[in-house]
Amino acid sequence: MEKIVIITGGSKGIGHGIAEVYHKNGYRVISISRTTLKKEYAVEQYPCDLTDLQQLEKTITEIFSHLDKTNTSILTLFNNAGSLGTVNTLENISAENISNTIQINLTAPLVVSSLFIKFTKGWDCKKRIINISSGAAINPYGSWAMYCSTKAGLDMLTKVVAKEQKKIKNGVKITSVYPGVVDTDMQEEVRNTSKENFKSVQRFIDFYEKGALATPKQVAEQIYELDMNGKLKNGKIIDVRNYK
Image (cartoon, rainbow, N blue to C red):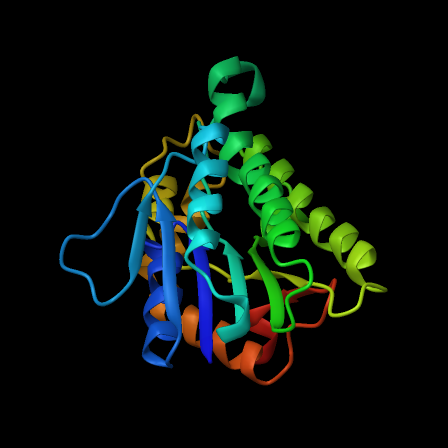
């Protein structure tokens, strides 16, 4: 019986860390992202622009055409891909960038989760969605209007789907995870933002200079342990820093 992980943004940062850790522990890993890795271990990679909803739906449909519900014991979806978008106060952000960031951070997880639930209806395996959210969902940062708003939306998606699936026989379990401050390309992007555009930039520079950033692998291993130990409760918002 196969244990399978489907992950968006599995080629970089936290997503890549999750892909590595689950693969190491015997999972079949399927990554959906704009970029693919040429010299990668046995991970199935599907190039896809998450802002192209037609392409995204086609990709998810293609993935499920290669899965066997009679030979699957665990199927987990990680909604991981995300973007800060333009870091600036809202009036200085273009309509196009607002739309693009919302599509990556919130619309894509909604669409992928919808298809995941639809395609696994009647499957007998353990089914789970893990949303990689952020403390920014509950802590407002100036110049992060889109990131904070979409992560808050992702948390509410978690609560709503948990409520919808609760009374369904073998319904999908869903959890939001706050990974903490992690050494990723996104963090580098934050540190390189001017103070004029992001008043809190020094805080993130200090995290980096003081060695306070977790590595993607460390966070991925924490998430895996929480998953295996049954700590990712349905409908809950989990901060990995509370479990060290």
